[in-house]
Image (cartoon, rainbow, N blue to C red):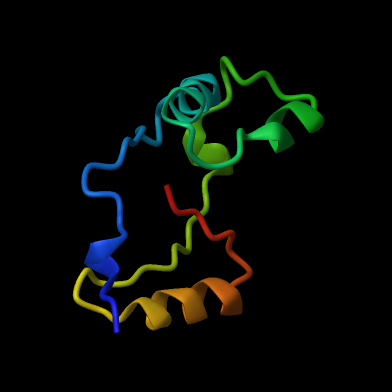
Length: 86
């Protein structure tokens, strides 16, 4: 059985809670990862001034590099998270 470290992104890009949502969206587009934060725009908020901490997920679902891949897939399914493999 494969382990999570065989498929995980080794050096993920990130932003900080105090960054503007527009910066997060630019990083996501540049790296071709994740959905662009469209809820901010749909709610009529300005992505240039709305901070990431205002819209970020606070309860993250994680796995360890040494976990079997199936554990990560099960967690993603249970929490209805999108699968993303590059």
